[in-house]
Image (cartoon, rainbow, N blue to C red; front, top):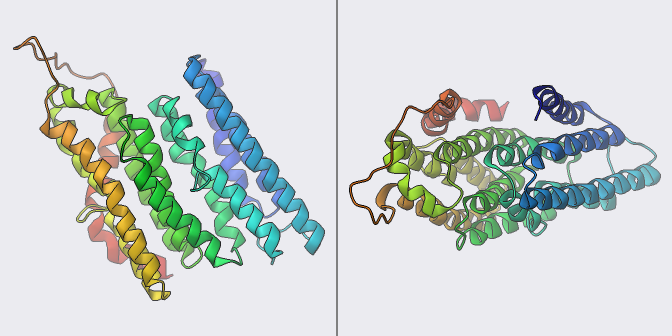
Length: 348
């Protein structure tokens, strides 16, 4: 792809998300989401592989459907209330439809079926954009609308954490595992979204850092399924030593950074007298922990079957840029001591 075309597409991606962030009008927010979708379509299909084209087509159809439902709900809300403003009091029915349309855009369960199939057809770089940047605009709209029915978001959040953990248990393809992981992590954010929007913002920030570190690690290891990770220890020992910590941070284990948002979310749910919800969310996190530990075990404690003994792979200096991965890995592993500062920011 031409660098000028690539720069234009990346600029359009940023423009669409920024427009949605800044808009207070449903029509402008819808235009921003459409610009965002249309900008990533060429990036997804640039490999000209049948799987990539199939994934791009599925993604386009799903996003177009969600955008059409969103526009329909916004128009219905304007018809019922006489105003297009996002942050004004809206009619409960359009708000519920908008919430479901944004859940379809995000890939929240039970509207998540497209996510693993789309991720499986993409390369890891485009998958990283899809798992991080493309989630920001719909989440920003969810933060603004303040759904009148709290039970809808709680049900979506619990279903996402449960299915996101359950769906990844039997997978061997790393991109599908990361897709289910994305669904589970988004479920945690949606659970607390209506009670503490600032805590949701903190959870999104940690999620973006940990997910980006995981995707960049797998891209550096050139691995697309679990078995390919078994030879990573011979190619990049330092990377293999660091990756389990990144994965355990993604799982939310202390003392890594990923523990901070889960801890604060469980605390907030308990304050809202939703102890059963917090208990279920904590239990479903164990399902996700299983497949993170499975990847860790494959990378660190297994050896790839090799019939020719004494022929280890060449370990050459990589020409790839590893500084972003190093910075993200440090942020993913070592920021838990900043929890008091994060709590102070959330309380503001």
